[in-house]
Image (cartoon, rainbow, N blue to C red):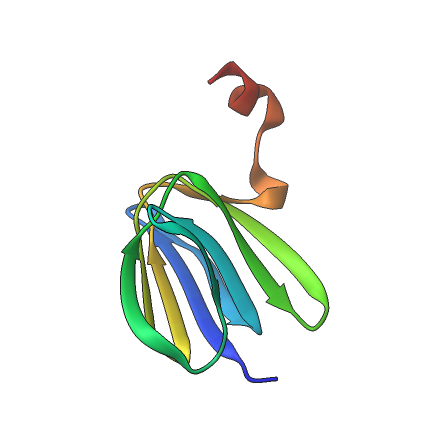
Length: 96
């Protein structure tokens, strides 16, 4: 299976930069699964989790809106805010 170069960036700086075999994100038009060789697109994102699959493992990054750009072997996500799964403060999230 091919590789996608993935970057997730917020105004505060990069949150994720790495590789994935598949990226799954919820756009305003519905959920998209991106594989290497996907047609180029730009899509607005909903507040949700972006799932990054690589070598049988899955990593989650929570995003608060933004846009996803797909260009062949690259997926770039520009989000208002984003947090990796292990960085989420559960108490703060439940208070929102």
